[in-house]
Length: 98
Image 1 (cartoon, rainbow, N blue to C red):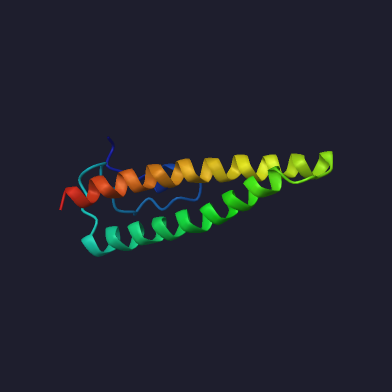
Image 2 (image 1 turned 60 degrees about the vertical axis):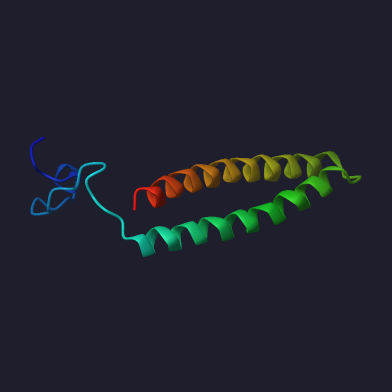
């Protein structure tokens, strides 16, 4: 490493930026992890509502174009749920490290 943070190597970056912490060397305060865990949980609840509505719409009599939109919404919800599970796993691991 050259000791220069990524911002200094990017166009418009500041060469006087402190070097960034390497992965695994910085500590995230417990209250931040707890708040992020809470936000991930709330995001999961909101996403579940959209997923259930999408499921119900998928079984309704809809025209072809509307069914395609329901499919797009369903796929996006499933992707969001997958990302949320990954966030939960990371936060759970961080909580265990405290």
